[in-house]
Length: 438
Image (cartoon, helix red, strand yellow):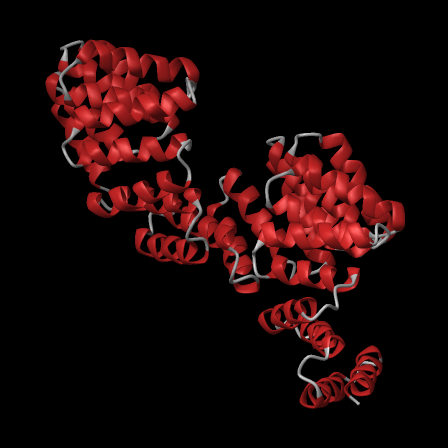
């Protein structure tokens, strides 16, 4: 009898004898291919083995044959979630809850799914319903903390993380969450301490290494940041954010070949992520591969049509392709999305300079400096216009400010060389050109 073998498989599964369980379920299906409980049991076993594709197929078959219990729909939702089919996962978890409102796993699963769908408020509600059934579930408090952090409710996030740590003081995720709060509040030193604490709790906790990479990059500790991202990639090779952070750190080190490789890997892992394609486009810009940059920014805008930084990148690309009139449209579009985008104003200034509309260029650079007085790039652009207009003393003032902020900026050193040449200060001009080359 197929049902007896299905029951035997359940017993084996509960006692951890996975191979015996699979053999029993297979025997049941040999006797009756439509034995729904055997398909459901195989789904549970494959779920334990993290064979998501087979588990998903087994659960779907069980439901088709009429074995639609709340637990099976919860398992189906978990497999959809693991397969990154979030809308299907949300539907399956919701169906499980309709059938059994006290199924904690279904409420928690729905919470995580809604978080992935960028619905933090709905996610929090689902997590709180899970807590009605189980007040000691650490993963739910972590989920709530993450959502409050995303919403900017840092006190509520901190309280959730602290409760999670009270329940399990050895879990690194709540400590890592506190580090993320410090990053959001622009406190990289405190963030670094939190991430280091998380790593001490679990040296293989990839999010902590990634967070430490972010903190060290903000602190200007580029080599330490590189190690953090490399460790995160080693521990979580499927995390596109880790590869993206690694790419950006290689850019900081001017190692553009490694940056390109890491960024391309990120696009393979997240082919529909606008931010990933934008980062790739920016690297191609640095390499002056304008056709490739154009393709990357077009992909970014197809996935994120309101991503201002992608419009800025596309505008810079069009300048490189000697299409400044068209570039204006992209910078203006960026400013329509983010009216305080400093890179967009700098891009406008660069474009107007290409079009020899110098008054408009000066206005754009000054607007950028009004928003970001410490922008060395805007100071360089303004200095170059003043140089062209023959206002050498004012140009020198602007370029010296730029060099105080960014002494290694090659374009600033070159502009200084040009100003010194115009001022007949030959030795200083040569020295500036040499620094630009280095």
